[in-house]
Image 1: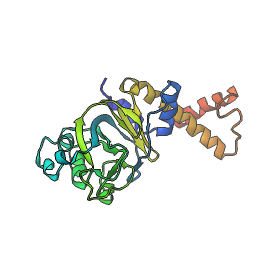
Image 2: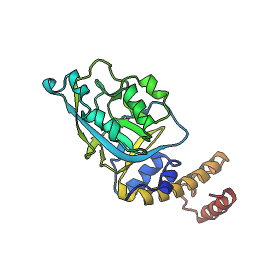
Image 3: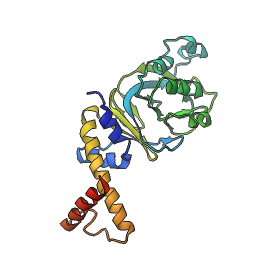
Length: 238
């Protein structure tokens, strides 16, 4: 099922922490991409369907600088094939010694309308990429000279990124804390539940800041708090 505009908009306004809780309730414990951070924090979450690129350890005779002249090279082809609104997710073997991409390729993704880019390795030109309007996540800046340690090998296949399983079409959400992967068939119901959870957590935060104890409030074991929450929702159009 394709990601609907309504679901996309809901996911832009919820945190990866809340999504992780909703997924955990359904038995999904390994959906958070480990070890990646945004190059720059943004007001809304990154949301898009996963388009994947897989790297493997390079065999030097097959991965010389000359391979980048081929327009069908998997890395180059992925940059031109990733659909607008999607997120390019790269399995770089959690190794940032060689760059997954650089400023020019990520700029091209932005110009094509891609919603974001994620690697469990690193980017070269990271300070340049941080200035772009498109969200980007990596583990750390890559050494700019070690170009041939990784070999791009497959496009739009199931991958592991930061120990999270990523299937093409899964929904990728990224915020200031990191990136989480939602199985495609669960995206709509997870977005709805996370929206409800966010409303309640905002209510709880307001009450706690006002001095209320968490006892009976979080979780709401005192049902009187649920009645107060219902009134709060009406008053705040939530």
